[in-house]
Length: 195
Ligand SMILES: CC(C)(COP(=O)(O)OP(=O)(O)OC[C@H]1O[C@@H](n2cnc3c(N)ncnc32)[C@H](O)[C@@H]1OP(=O)(O)O)[C@@H](O)C(=O)NCCC(=O)NCCS
Image 1 (cartoon, rainbow, N blue to C red):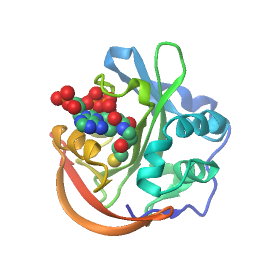
Image 2 (cartoon, rainbow, N blue to C red; image 1 turned 180 degrees about the horizontal axis):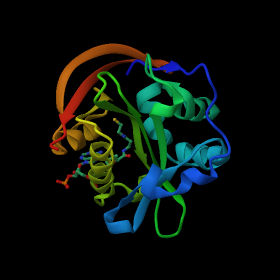
Image 3 (cartoon, rainbow, N blue to C red; image 1 turned 135 degrees about the vertical axis):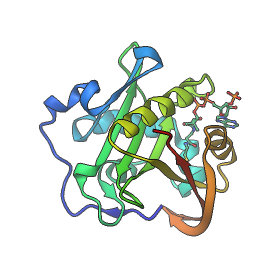
């Protein structure tokens, strides 16, 4: 995952962006939804990240802080702009933030979409929500002309790797990269989307 900090800031005043049908999507028949989140949700995002401390320790060798929230909201792959980036909060029936998804259009190829992060709160894992999010995301991406999903999973995150493989992702290659305080092997995975 070669991500560089965006030169511009994330757009504010996003009231109109909260329409899931336009800028997000329904999950599990609408029981859950993926809706845009940004600077106004910073405290909620930090709370989610703190609940997922073991993930940050395992993948970055550091505890969650505003640094990871900044990276989630603003980091972009080379050549992409904030307009290509969708940071979506996963909200359930009670409205609480139970997870987050970051996906960027047009990387590494024009018709590829790159999943920067999918992270669920520990208490909602293992019940099929991740699977349902992927299903909703695939429809969201296909509807926007995307032909392929891409991501990078760290070698030590064996559970996540199995999860992506079960979703039809295959490993393309691997690279050694430093995330936070930890150098890891990142497995780059891809899944073609059937039109
Ligand atoms: C990875 C993640 C998004 C999967 O979402 P989830 O809702 O827990 O997954 P699901 O319940 O939809 O599981 C789908 C399948 O993946 C498998 N799976 C998911 N997480 C797993 C884990 N940690 N270890 C082993 N298998 C796992 C499940 O066995 C399940 O298979 P099954 O249906 O045959 O039982 C979620 O566990 C998570 O947020 N993990 C921490 C963050 C992370 O690692 N994100 C990925 C970064 S690349």
